[in-house]
Image 1 (tube, each protein chain N blue to C red):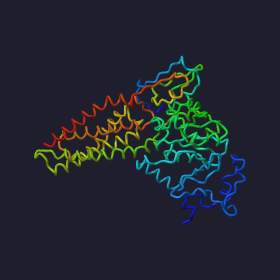
Image 2 (image 1 turned 90 degrees about the vertical axis):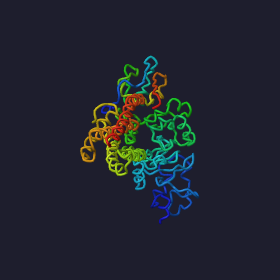
Image 3 (image 1 turned 180 degrees about the vertical axis):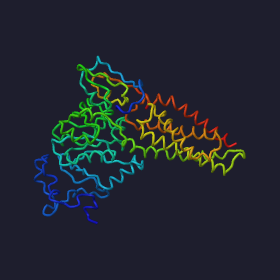
Image 4 (image 1 turned 30 degrees about the vertical axis):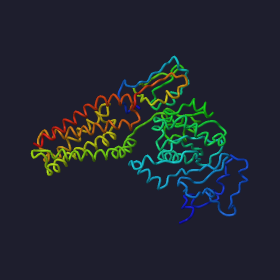
Amino acid sequence: MDKSKDCGCNEHPSPKGLNISTSNVNILSSMDKIISPCSTQTFDATAGHEKPGFKLCSYVDSFIQTHAGDIPIIKSRLEKNDLFSTFYVRCGINRYQYTVAPGLYGIGNPDKSCEVLVTANFKLTFDHLRKQLSKTNAWILVLDTKGINVWCAAGKGTFSTGELVKRIKEACLEKIVDHKRVIVPQLGATGVSAKDVKKQSGFRVVYGPIRASDIPAFLKNNKKADKKMRQVTFNLYDRFILTPVEIQIVLKPALIAALILFIISGFGPGIFSFSGAWERGVVSFCALVAGIVTGAFITPVLLPFIPFRAFALKGIIAGSVLAVLSLAAMASAVNGAAGFLALFLFSVTISSFLAMNFTGTTPFTSPSGVEKEMKQYIPVQICALVLSSGLWIYSAF
Amino acid sequence: MKELRYLEDVSTLVLDEEKCIGCTLCTEVCPQAVFEMRQGKACIVDFNACMECGACVNNCPSEAIAVSPGVG
């Protein structure tokens, strides 16, 4: 394998690569004098950055020399491995270990006058940001948010004033840029106090747009965000893309629930019957699946189209529809009205609970509202579950 | 957010207009367009859109805004 490919750097060292530290960069006046060790031939942009035991990250294109040391320049184009890992993370696989190293990066051809964009060290966030910056020269200051996105990290206190100030100092930002501003994503405001950052670091916080895709327009517009850039949205695609994680989270509890279902289904006239456990277990398992599908998938995706505001109630509405449909399909396998009612209640309760759980994923529910909803609906859900279990055992006799 | 609304009258958001110095930062950081500037002072124009994220509270230089949600 080609050596340069192996280390994930420029595949074809080019004259552009040769100039990587000097073209349009005026950070060091002495920079023009820096001569690469192999200047007669091609210049490997990452030469001299190899360290035993370390591997260069595939998103690093080259390094730029500054007064504060060498800073990695990252690629704005996502590669195949980025897209694969995005897919895994969207499915909830290893999503808490999906990080980039915090610190300062550059993109394009940044110089002393370029803006500093602050972001989180969740790689999904990092990738999302860099792919929007293909025509932008900027510095990117990555905070250590333990692999959590900007908004959630701001809420949990890792995307914070203290962390921002610490990273500004550690990166020696005052040696990198000749201005005193950092652009913080608007959603980071939940964890950052502009006033305190200024006091503690001398850097002024400018709140950038919510979406990374608006950054080029924001920068062009003299760092002014219009109203649309400042408002959060939650469209059909946003809701859909979040559902695999909702389902993944529920898989383990669902497995335990299924085991309990098979045991309960075995109770009958002969105290316990294995054939009963299997036959009735399968039917109740289908009711469980229907509840999960409506609560963790259908309700989130169709959220604005399902009546009522409370998520638990939305889950009941959507869950009822699918429960009736699926029970009608399994009619021959259920004996009597008690059995029907038991499965109906069970399926709807699961749907209602999971729909309520989705409040934590949406960008418009208030903690006070969720608390009110939980106080109202959790007792109802518990009653329905107890009633459903009783009816299900009763229906076997 | 216009198309998606949550429960009404639950937010714990309080704005003390007396204390407001008109810096406009709350209108900038709020992701739900809860605030608007009127006659040089911030005022709440969409109370029920508030999701108690605390961005405004954190950035208000004159401590004119408060939210006090329980443990979310």
